[in-house]
Each structure stands twice: as C-alpha cells, then as structure tokens.
Length: 134
Image 1 (tube, rainbow, N blue to C red):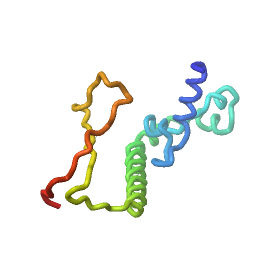
Image 2: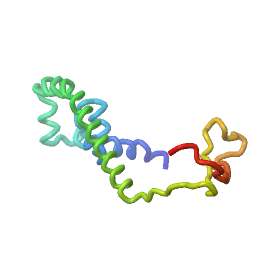
Image 3: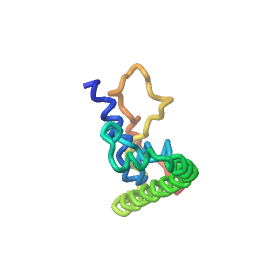
C-alpha cells in the first residue's frame, strides 16, 4: 500500500480542484504539470514544451502565477459564500427561552488530554435561568 503513495500524491496534485479551478501543482509552481509518461514517450505537448520557446513561456507563467493564485482565491471564497447561503436558507432558527436546556461546547483548553479521542465535546446540560440580552 505504501508503494502507491507517490502515484496517489501525484494524482492529487495534478487534478484540478472544484473550489479553485486550478491544480495544486500549478498554484505552487506556476505551470501545468507534465506527467512522467509524456517525458518517456514524447508527445506533441512535450515536444512543444521542450523547445526554445519554453524559457519565454515559463517566464510568462511565473509572471502570471500571482494573478492565477488571486483568481483561485476569489473562486474559493465565492464557493464558500454559495455554500453558506445554501445552508442558511435551510437552517431553522430556534430561539432559546428561560427554562430550556442547552449544551456548552468545550474549548481546547478545557478538554482533559487524558480522556482520549472519544471524550465528550460538550459540557452540560445547563438550564437557562435568565435572559441577559438578545
């Protein structure tokens, strides 16, 4: 299983992500990935990329990498906003009143590290006795 890890990582880095529209490889290095098969068996793409014009196109890609990263960030934020709107449209607002029972989420600092990963993530239940403000 461990011998497949490099191929799996390569596939992950070379696959465009829906949130950004770009591959992680292209966002880091500023150019599209050339798969190892194209290097061993020269293809039309590889022969075009390995010519003298490659230096100029690489410099142009490096100049445009910041713009591509910014556009990927904008697409990612837009997708998160779309998901948030979808969730908020279907979420039911429930007003709490005096007498209701609630659970309080534990913070990282208040969790006991000796309890392990199966510990509870909340304290309570607590009864609401007074309303402080909205």
